[in-house]
Length: 280
Image 1 (cartoon, rainbow, N blue to C red):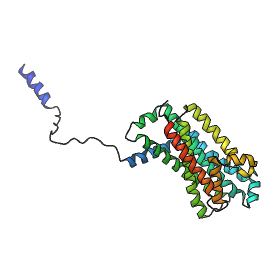
Image 2 (image 1 turned 120 degrees about the vertical axis):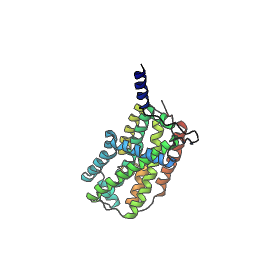
Image 3 (image 1 turned 45 degrees about the horizontal axis):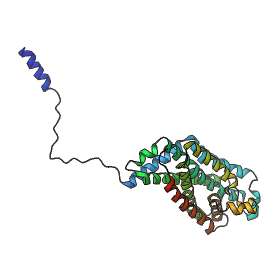
C-alpha cells in the first residue's frame, strides 16, 4: 500500500507544472492594426479576389483586349478616325480604356459587392475594426489597382499595334480614369446595395453591353444621330469616353465631360450612402 502511494506521488511530481500568472504583471489586450493598415489590407484582399475570379478576369481583362484587337483589324471606327485625322489605333485606345473603367468599377465591383451582401460578408465586416468606411475604401483601392493593371496592359498591347501617345496625354488620362472610376464605383455600389444579388448581376452586365455599344464609350457620340448624342452626352459613360478622347486625340483637357463625371460621383455617391443596405 505504501509502495503504491509512493509511486502515485512520483507520477504526480513528474507532471509539467504550469507557472502561475504574476498578479502584478499588466495584461495588454490584443489590438487591431492602425486604420490605414486595415484599409490597405482590405484593398489587397479585394484586389486579389477580383483577379482570381474567372468571370471578373474575363470581364476586366479579356473583353477589353478583344475589343481593342477587333477595333484594330476592322473598320468600325474608321469614319470617326478619318474625320479627326488620326489613325485607327489612336481612335480605338481611348474608348477601350473607358471600357476598362466601366468593367472594373461598375460590373466587377458591383457584382462582388452584391454577392458579399447576400452572403452576409458586408454585415460581418462592418462590425469589425475595419468598419463600413474602411470596407468601402478598400473596395475603392481594389478598383484603382485593377484599373492600373488594365491601363498598363492596354497601353502595352496598343503600343505593339501602333499606338503612340505622348506623355502629357498619358498623365491627363490617369486623372480622368480616376474620376471615371469614382463615378462608376458609386453607381455600382448603389445598384449592389439596393437590389438583390441576382438582379445586380443582370443589371450591371446588361448595362455594360449597352454602354459599350451605345453609351459613347467605344464608339464616339459623332457616330450617332444628333438627338441621341445630345442626350447620351450627359451620361457618365459618354463623359468618360469624350474626356479620354480629348486627352489623347484633341490633346487638351475638356472641362465639360469632367464636370459631368464629378456631378455623377457626388450625386450617386450621396444617394448610395443613404440607400445602401448592408444585408438582404
